[in-house]
Amino acid sequence: MTTTVTAPTSAPPVTRRRSPRRGAVVAVAIVAILVAVLVPTYIYPYAAFTGRAALVLATVAMSVQLMSGTAGLSSLGQAAFLGVGGYTAVWLSRAGLDNGPLQLAAAAAAGAGAACLCAPLVLRARGVAFLMVTFAVGELAHTAASTWVPVTGGDNGLYGSYPTLWPTVPLPTSDLASYLYLLCCFLVLAGLVALVLRTRFALALRAAADHEPRLAALGHRVTGTLLAGYAMAGALAGAGGAMLFSSRISIAPSDMDFDTSALALLAAAIGGRSLVGAVIAAVGIVLVRDQLGVDTGGHAQALLGAAFLAVAYRRPVVAWVRARRSAWAVARGRR
Image (tube, rainbow, N blue to C red; front, side, top):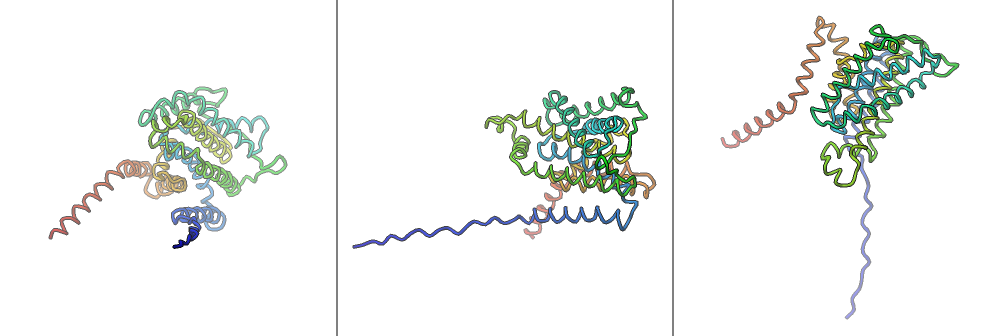
């Protein structure tokens, strides 16, 4: 009796399919970029003025979202690093270094350095305590900027000169040219953040948000990971400060007040863990504040306050609606 041995058939190759959600995010991002370029250029020129403020807030919102949406640490003090970056750019301008990309890089480095200095105090807290400590950092930075007149100019702030794209290529001073320059800066920063979120480092940040003790038990240096994430968030906010200076050729302590940090946190909370969602929320907040608030008789603060309440009570309301729907379905099935 003979037996035949058949060779095992090879398994079909595994093909990776792009998730529909990722494709939708890419499509939304492409449409948003086209709208951001075409609307101020051809359709509504005044949108360039509002768009500059939206790009600055969107950059700070990405900074907050990197900590809150990824690492699970909500910050109320990113305006401090915005001011550090802005004053770095203005002092470079006053020293004769008018190159815009150079100011952007120096402001990002200054924001990261300031975040590293604050990290030993800030990263000792978690949850609500972290929120309050960062709020204290932001308020201390705002107070220091108001009183340190030789460096910050006091409440009047400091003025510089228009940045240049290259030492021999001056940047046009029109609102549209300034907006397009800020849009390019924002797209570069957003691309870098998107690349970071696809690395193992971002996975470690998410793991720290989900279960920090388990991450430490696996041998990861949680404090070092959070320090690097906080430094990156500070660098983003510092770059936003350089963009703010480029849009107005000035920086003042009022740019570091609580409203800036609160609106950035609101945008990050609306966006959740989505970078694109945080950016879209920041643009919507600026439109509510600068456009819809005027159309409603100056009630922008009330509208933004309602948005804060909607975000804060979103989960309880959704849970209540789902519970009522389930109870109604059960009651209907019994009839």
